Amino acid sequence: MADRPTLEKLVKQNDVWLSRNDVLHGIKKYDVSSKKIRIVTDCGETITVNNSRRSSSARSLRNSKYGKVCKHCKLSEERINKFVSKDFYDPAITYVEPQQKKSVPKKVEKKSTARPISIPVSAEWPAAAQPAAAQPAAAQPAAAQPAATQPAAAQPAATQPAAAQPAATQPAAAQPAAAQPAAAQPAATQPAAAQPAAAQPTAAQPAAAQPAAAQPADSNKTKEPVSMSAKDKFSPSQKKRLETLMISDEYDLDNPDLLPEFAALEAELTARRKKEFCDIYENSREHMLAKLERDISAFLISKGFIEIKSSLLIPEEYIVRMGIDKDVELSKQVFRTDDGQCLRPMLAPVLYNYLRRLDKILPDPVKIFEIGPCYRKESDGSSHLEEFTMVNFCQMGEGSTRENLVQLIDEFLTHLGISYEIEGDECMVYGATIDIMHGDLELSSAVVGPVPMDMDWGVNKPWIGAGFGLERLLKVKHNFKNIKRGSRSEFYYNGIHTNL
Ligand code: ATP
Ligand code: 9VF
Ligand code: MG
Image (cartoon, rainbow, N blue to C red; front, side, top):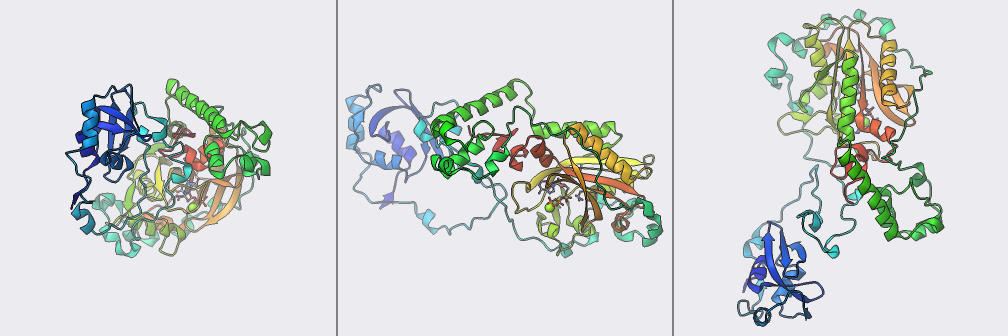
């Protein structure tokens, strides 16, 4: 018994390559990575295959049979004979997989947030010309994107006592929450007038969202039932591919007679999307999410808000102190580390700390904001991401009225060219909220403080604040059917699928 030779060894020893249609080629050169072998044949073709003992390529090379000899490779008799006679490798021997492979216990695969994708071989060495057959057409359908993930079991919040908080986050002078006397927050300091009245819809209706020309809408048509004949025309996977390539804006799926065949349609859409990509490369080179962040940042700075950048990892205890205990849905959505920290699901805890500290440093009112990634385990699809970007702006002190909050939100959304409606809602963390809606989609929850929880954060002045999801703003602005198009992603760039 012996080990099967690796494909690398077979390539080296045979010095020839057998293509899928059994044509024998000479090997001009080859490169080996940990997983792949890239072979350049004497006739100039480049082939990339998995470096596996068990692959059909390895089997072919172990065999001595071939169909034809490539006439462009100009193989010598000697090289052909070497392949046929194989004195370096005895096919009579029963070859087995290496012993240690069998003895290694099968690894239990842990779910991770970033599931590896299978990389089309063409992606490995982009410079090389890849034979069409080696490149699966739809190697990364949208469905290949990581679905809701459930990492290691959530750590109980109770294991994180307040005292275990990193010293730096709570300097002695900064009044740790627990030490915050209730008396410092007399209920009487909450003027009735500052409490949000039942939200009234306002007349504010800024300019309607303008979908950018470069981002044709995944229009509503795709949501409507497609006629039987259109259904028949394309298979579900073909339809999915066409939708991924943003077909709906340009062709009428309800009118199959007017539709080209799949291959022609796919080629046409792919060409358009490539052109759009090249235009971005030529002109702006800006990522829409990053650009929106810069735009919002400039807007808020112009309105007197100071920009904060804080850590994505925060003490788990902050979540508890936000009133989100184990029974509350948001608690279950938190990605926890094994050392009492978590990926922040919101910006408010650190903003609370900033407000408390900056109130001793800066003149009243204190106006601050942060924009950055937040993380929540979400199970719900097209408007929820597990990694999204929130902007939370808030003002504490003078002028923290509902009127000013609504005015600011109106200027903000008008600046972004996004229409909205106002709805009153309730949430567990703040109580009454002013929800900013675009149709059925919540763009923001806004709050007029103070709220009782302020006591736990050492904050004792009225405040106003709002949190918006940037990807939701992009979804509305560009009429994306799925929020992923404008998100942090390897699958989409500025709404365009990257597998073109
Ligand atoms: P929803 O009810 O839609 O899940 P939420 O009430 O949980 O939203 P908030 O906690 O108020 O949301 O967060 C403020 C804003 O952040 C939301 O209005 C939304 O724009 C955005 N947001 C919240 N969760 C997500 C998410 N998982 N993906 C993308 N954006 C989100
Ligand atoms: C408004 C969005 C508690 C004074 C530091 C700022 C707010 C809603 C924020 C969301 C969240 N809250 N519900 O708080 O501006 O993430 O909390 Si502060
Ligand atoms: Mg939610």
